[in-house]
Structures are given as C-alpha cells and as structure tokens.
Amino acid sequence: MDPIQAIILGFIQGVTEWLPISSTGHLRITEQLLGLTLPLLFDVTLHVGTLVVILLFFRKDIKLVLSALVKGDFKSENGKLIPLIIVGTVPTALIGVVFSNTIETYFSSFLPIAGAFLICGVVLFLSKTGQEQKENITYIAALAIGAAQGIALIPGISRSGLTIATALLLGVRREKAFKFSFLLSVPAVIGALGLTLYEQHEVLTLVGVGWTEILVGIAVSIVVSYFALKLLWKALAGKKFYLFAFYCWLIGAVLLALSLSNF
Image (cartoon, rainbow, N blue to C red):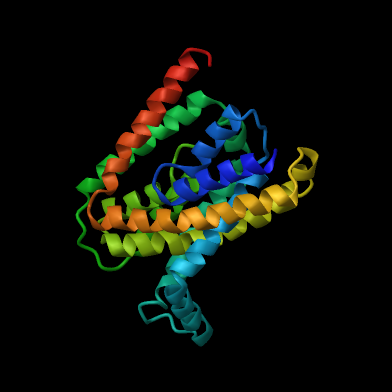
C-alpha cells in the first residue's frame, strides 16, 4: 500500500460511513480493484476518523449524556439514553464476537456483497413507510436497532442505513433515530477497534501497511466524513433517506453482473 491508495480508501470511508451505502462494502470493492489484500484491522482503523467526527458533531449531546452518567441521573432525557445505549450495544457485541470472523471470510467476493447491497436497498426503501409517532425509544426498539447495527458488519449492509431504517420502521421520529444511531455507534466502534487490535495487532506490518498510510487514511476520512454526515441529516430531514436505496440496488446489480461474468 502507498499513501495515494490510503487517501483513496480514506476518502471512500469518509463518504460512505455516514451515507447509508455501506463503507465496508465499498472498501472491500475498492481494495479488490486496487489489488490490495488488507486485514479487517485496516478498515477498522479508518473508523477512528469517523469516530472523531461523531464526537465533534454530537459533542453537546455526548457531554450531556456523560454528565448524566456521572450524576447517576437516569431520569432526564439524556440520562434515559444511557441504559438504552447499553441495551443496544449488547446484540451488537454478541453478533460481532460470534460472527465477525465468519462474515470476514464469507463476504470476501463480489457475489455475496452484491446480495447484501440489494437487501440493504430494500430496507432503505421500506423505511419511508414508517409512521413517526414515537418520541421515545423503548428497550425493545433499542435491542432491535442494536441487532441491526450488528448485522451491518456484513459488507454491503450500511450501519447508519440499517439502524436508522429500523428506528423509522418502528415508528421513532427521524430526529431521535438519527441521534440514537450515532450515539450507539460510539461504543461499537471503540469495541471493534479494541477487539481487532487484540486479534490482529501484528498483521498490518506483515502486509506492508505503515503508520504513514494509517494516519493519512484517518485524516482524509475525518475531513470527508464531516460533510457526509451533514448531507445524511439533510436527506433524512427532507424525507429523502429512502432514495439511497436506488444507489444500493445499482451497486448490487453491477457487482452481480461482474460476478456472473467471472470478473
């Protein structure tokens, strides 16, 4: 890997992490097209950049949630989010620990990734049918959204797309769905990074990825993902979130055609 390739992958991570079009799926495709065979750890390190953006974008909300946690206040609006985030993190963690290696192995070619993109498109499109009547997220909803986040480990399934779509289909208002989706991603990204570092800490050096490439990729990801996150909110607020389904279907169809042609 060279710095130019790191810039390309960082740019793709930044754009696709927040838009509901699967960053992992796009990274897998791009890595194959560039002739790179990279471990999961590199993809996860790029998420550090997008994590920084979450902390900046939602800094006020995170500060209020942490303040409520320190005070032991679980009755205020921000305090109620704490147990919901914990509940939502449980299925994400279970799916990650049990199935991450299987997912990494099975979803390494275009065909299964194509299927995942097509399925993601269906869920995104259906999200427009959700009746936004609920101001508060229930524990059942938190479990469902957390499970959706875990399923989004599959390349081609968007984390932001599946979690927000699940919340909308459960009747949660879009503002609440947007906020909870990204607050829920914080422990998921930190946990994934910690687990993958533990399992693959020596792998990046063996495949020729140095700190220069990692830092360049993260820096590009931070800059690009900030604008992508604002674009996602604009699309969600304008009730155009479901339109990303057409992009997922297009990518899925192209990958399917390439797979059938033995590309």
